[in-house]
Image (cartoon, rainbow, N blue to C red; front, side):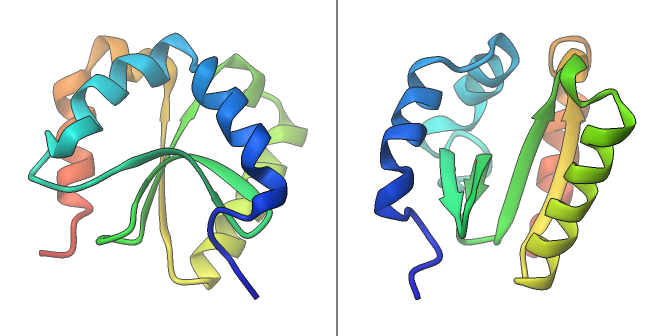
Length: 118
């Protein structure tokens, strides 16, 4: 069964790419075109039934950016279950609050680099 880029999620992915949050657009400028350590990232990539914010296939790394909507117990529990599921599939998930991307970009980029296997 296909796990990546399922056709039934194609329109959702396109819509999310067209309407990136400001934090996603800001981080994307630093990830696109292999700008970070020569690693290729995809934005709004689907894995199984989930659409992740950023994905690096070479590292099996998922980056999620969390805005205010993620700051409630129900969403936090859902995110934890989703992360655990993706971890079981062999992916590493790292999360940043949107404000971290704007206020501490160099630390965010360093943490992403530190997550690389090599």
